[in-house]
Each structure stands twice: as C-alpha cells, then as structure tokens.
Image (cartoon, rainbow, N blue to C red; front, side, top):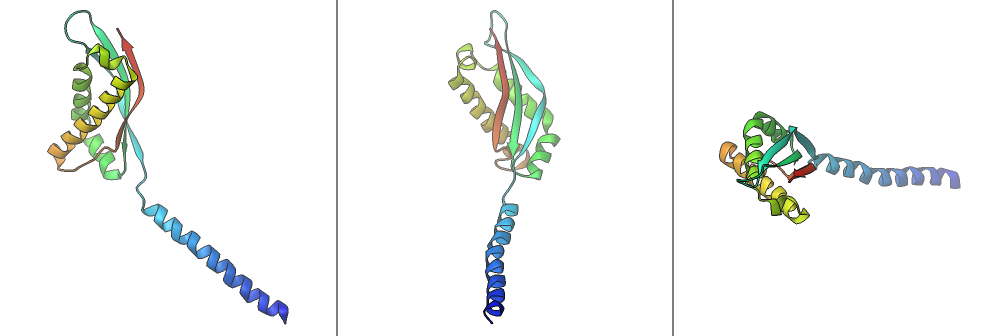
Length: 139
C-alpha cells in the first residue's frame, strides 16, 4: 500500500517542479533579443581639419532589439553611414587617440543615429548601442 501512495505523490511533485520551468521559458521568449547590424565596409575618414592629413578607420556594428529596428537600419543605410562619416570627420586628434575620447565619439554616434531615426521615421531608440569593432588612427 505504501508504494501506491508514493507513486501519485512523486508524479505530483514532478509536475509541480516542471510547471515553473515552462513558465520561465515563455517569459524568456517575450524578452527582446539583441541583433547586430554591421555597417559594411569599415569607415575611413580624414579628421583634424587643415594641415597634414590624418585618417581614422572604424569598423562599426549597431545593436538593435527588434526586427523592425534592423530593417529600418538596412532601409536607411546610406544616411546612417553619412551620420557616422560626418561625426568622424568632425573629430580632433585629442579625441580620437584616447580611450575616453573614443567612448565620447561612440556615445555621440548613438545619439546622432537615434536623432536621425526620430526625425526620419518618428521611431525612438531604434539603435540600442553602437559598437566599435576596430578603431585605427593614422596621425
């Protein structure tokens, strides 16, 4: 008789443990997943104003959290690239040679790209983050 009582108890215990696992899977599916849109080819821009030519070469990826955002970037690739090239060209040497300066450029790129999308498509925060995969400076 003890075996008959233990089997249903074991089944109930297993079902109660399994149910929260399934619920957490649904919650994870509801969370947005990050996608990365690489802006190819890498950016090459001269910077620093007049005088000797200086170049910066930057490989950029944009992190987005939805398929819509990824599609918007692909649809508006030319103006997005223009925003980044203009930003890089406006830099001074002191900013592009330090890690603090590069971080400022990265944050400014994120801000300006999102401002473009807000003005063009009325969508806010299309880009979640800007990532520099490489940042090479020729002085």
